[in-house]
Length: 112
Image (tube, rainbow, N blue to C red; front, side):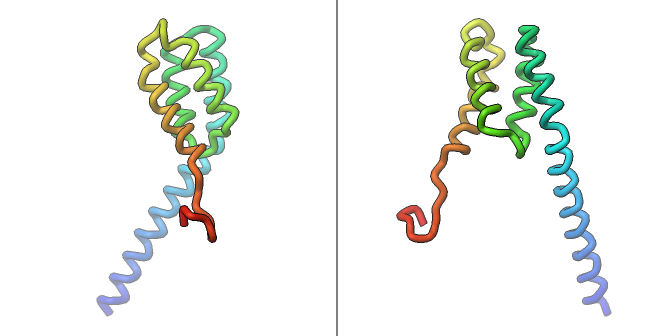
């Protein structure tokens, strides 16, 4: 009987964790366009704190597209010499770009 209770509690915990992960991914998808528009507005207003904040949010979003990442990198490269506050964003963007450009193993490749 204790075994069934234990399995039930473990199952509920796993379902709860899966639900929160699913909800977080759903929120990422919904927030992408809003954060992107805020980032572009910050760029047009030359708001460095906004660029850093919304750029960081975008980099952590799972649904960030390659074109958007390239735009973030371009903006940061043009402004980093005048604003050293963007160094951390530049490093994070570079790492995200390396992650996007990595070669993935497939069956029959030398990486597999």
